[in-house]
Image 1 (tube, protein in one colour):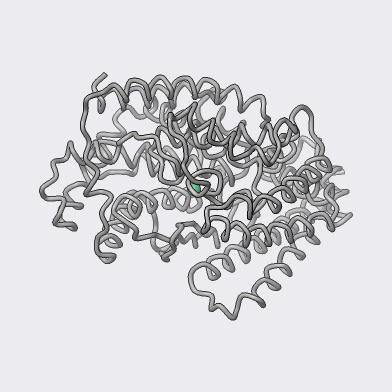
Image 2 (image 1 turned 90 degrees about the vertical axis):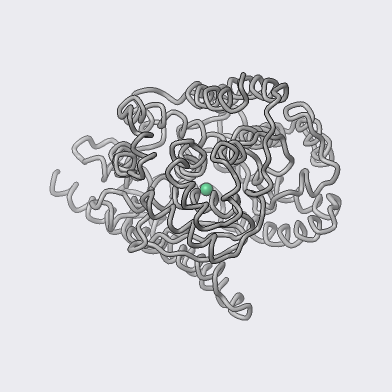
Length: 499
Ligand code: ZN
């Protein structure tokens, strides 16, 4: 019996290792695509990417692997790493096999065309150009959801692709309290008399200075350049090429965008660089994609990156690197990076209202997939929600429903991750401060070792061994709740806005 289990385990470990290599190849190609691929290389590259995706499918979805995975599912003698391999292979297979290959191809094709249409629609700020393509993608995604299967809301099937333990009802519960808390804070902030000037942080500076500054900050915080590297792109991203090769891009739009997006990507990268060495040659390294990864990006960008103690250490370096900041007092700077102001575009939003953008999109997607709203009504519903939750109404499709290409890429059932990541981050931060009460004082002295070692011990090292709902209990001792994020917001903004 045990011998039998050993031989089965060695087969699934091999499939998992191969899966890890193929995923790495995919990331390497993506890095190259967005940083240096010549235009005439695109056609061949698309075929190559398709070939790798096909190999991945063959690797994870063979009949033999399926039988082994099923036979090992309830076996207790295997350790947590092997259990995680079984779980991941099973989910991979379920998602790949339940949806017919032709349907997936049809959806891919529809998305490619929709992205071209979205670009034109965005440039002309004309929803009508995009509408028929969006309708087709939504209908195809509904079919995909029906193939995957679900209970309750149809969106649950698409959420399952990201996180099996999560569903619409759980998300709604978390978002309801978050929405009330944020709206309460927005009322108080609106009534506040505090004046904040963001001119200097919104200004553009010489690229070399911004590069040096971002590099200095992220490496001081814990990003290892020996296991990474930098590129440049308009929309920054991280590429998880290998356990010791995690690179990210920086943009140089203005001070705020450059420094905080570098911190965000560094959060993703530091997480991946610090997984347990035992996972190195498995498909489990790199961290849990989706909202746990997002929680780390947002943690470094906001909870740590917009924190007072953090900047008490780094602000002198800003003033040294960028002359203009010499005339700006620390307090003014701290307030400027924490300004709260409802705005239309999610990616430009402040730390507080950002959550509302994600909640609005989640609510719309839920009603759309439950057939409660029609495509034609989307722009109006969008605008009504912005008016209701943020008190602002987009005056063009470009600053409203056409603002990003997520839907054109077929990404439905994903948007909640942006707010969930913050909720996770708030809860991790609460626990971290309970365990290490002086953690921010260390940061103020430029010592980030205790912080990184807490994150490594409680989150990073596990990578994908546990699911998000198991991880939150393991690292914080509690189920996920919005209350810690709200506590953090209340404490921070009551001090800045004096209420
Ligand atoms: Zn991110």
